[in-house]
Length: 225
Image (cartoon, rainbow, N blue to C red; front, top):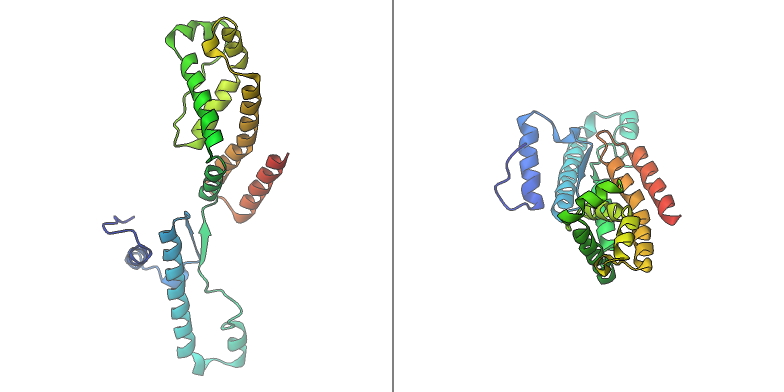
């Protein structure tokens, strides 16, 4: 690890990475792939580093041209065989987060979430704690609005309180939540559930590309259903 003290441009990050590699005697051509988030500066840094590797390999090829025989030229220095190509891999979990945020970024969704959050706040008042215990139901949890998975957990916990909330609404309209809203709530929870499961699986410590493909495909199938 190294501390970044300048603006996080692609060129600056590339230079800092090269310094770290040099410190540990790691040749730049030993780097096969780099996993990053979707930031433009991170993508730029990988492309810059990749171009530098290609330049080094071309220079090496030119230096060794006179000493190569026909077999070496066809097998080890075939330009169609990109063994020296640095691969930049976008973080699957981060990519999924961006897709989810884009899909729920609209006024109708935000208005509905605001209504649901308001009901959760009413159900969390201290005077209702004993009533929740009496019916053996957990109180709904409040979300952190900047984290969609936190909002999913809030909506899921509210859905589990549907019967309790509806019984309160019979005597107090403050707890009233229209049937159409409960239907919409269930639809949102059902839709976000496979995305939540996929997010957790994509955070595995040893995730391979085949693992990712299976998780991604399974998530798409569940969403279609």
